[in-house]
Amino acid sequence: MKKLLILGYVWPEPNSSAAGSHMMSLLTLFVKQGWQVTFASPAQQTEHKEDLTRLGIDERAVTLNCNSFDDFIRDLNPNTVLFDRFMLEEQFGWRVAKHCPDALRILDTEDLHSLRHARHQALKQNRQLEKEDLNSDVAKREIAAIFRCDLSLIISDFEMELLKNHYLVPQKILLHCPFMLDLEHFTTSEKSYSDRQHFISIGNFRHEPNWDAVLFLKQNIWPIIRKQLPKAELHIYGAYPPPKATQLHNSKQGFLVKGWAEDAKHVMQQARVCLAPLRFGAGIKGKLAEAMFCGTPNVTTHIGIEGMTMGLDWAGLITVLTDFDNQENMAIDFAKHAVQLYENQTLWHKAQKQGYQLIKNNFDKDKIQAKLLTRIFTIQNNLDTHRSNNFIGQMLQHHYMKSTQYMAQWIEAKNR
Image 1 (cartoon, rainbow, N blue to C red):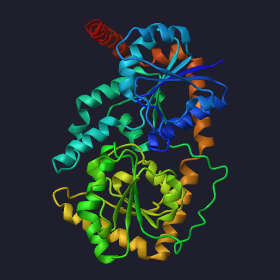
Image 2: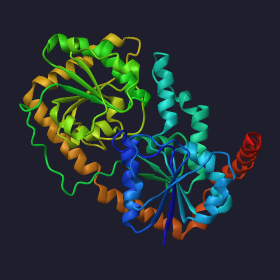
Image 3: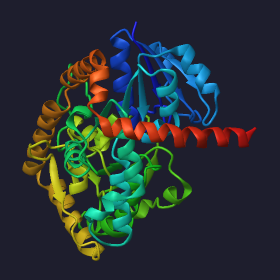
Image 4: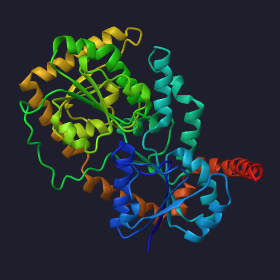
């Protein structure tokens, strides 16, 4: 039997974040393949955590910088280990390589953290992203983890090209693996244009790009929209809203901070337009995939659509953020698009249709999962050759095992 260990940065919360939904897609795939799956994490369990045991998945808590993990992985002896984000590969990768050297090591990046970090730093300085921003210390750590692994799952075709062309990562250790949506029973929404009202914005408040978008809506964009559509409301949903977010709630302004949504698809289908004024970020956006799935056209930015179109027309209107020194112009342009899409029924229907097409073409679970399994089996059957052709990865693994191992053992000794 195939044994898979997934080391999670957090416990999966599919109703809280796109990362949680994506992880559940991977877990479900391997369980259906008959693999014995163990999910382990050093993170605290949360109120919205998915119960993995219902899928037959063994849940384990593990400790950072502790040799108890060595005994755990030796006893489990997995054929495959999947690291959820590069930070987990940094923490546990050397232990996996030492005690289970023949196990296939896969990195699920979720998104390129270094790209999101670089864009955030540029935004703070009110400027465009520059090439030098991509060579940060975070990038050096993340790209090193990608090289050390046998395969890395990359959620965005934009990030695939960035890795190959800027960081010169070989194609053979990368796989484009976007959202895997179940389209078997996919149907168009019964909610028509006239059945819907108001705007919606949704996203986990712990994710910095989402919080920045909420603030941008509140301070810059929504007052302009509200002036033109005085009866419209903006409903803000998302897990873990902090007090600073709930304090933005103002019913007189039609700015309603709703917080956690028990059924995100239901509230999305009630709205006429989804707003996602993302000014930085990486990967692909679960909120926009869900909007398209629910037949809700959206207004977003070039950051929002990145990695999602794959050559097709977008399911709404796009504001290109270019003048970071002039927030007012950006807000005016975004608000104009929001009002236009909200009031123009013909444009709205066209955007909805394009969204359905994007979902069917780009995020079909069956096609993506078949490609993923084929790549995994191919590498497993030729693991020694695959690794010998990745000298940079071998070199990084050699030095990493020395430095990280000794640092972890020092921390462990210090904690005694």
